[in-house]
Length: 78
Image (tube, rainbow, N blue to C red; front, side, top):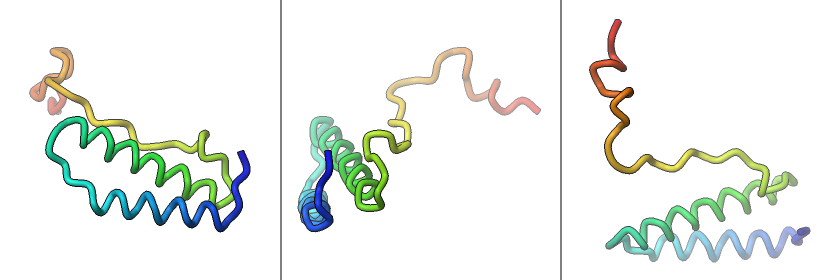
């Protein structure tokens, strides 16, 4: 989908405003923040002429405990 430079800049501004106003109070808000950050990254990629859908992004944070095969003492064995 091709967007004009002006539309991309407007969308970037709107996403940044939404992020600045967002108050994280629960997991749903955190998910919304992560989605907005992803949108920001995709729009920035689009503004540089790249396909935003194909841009590499940071992996989401893990939830819960590490698997037993990745326990702390095993990770730091010299």
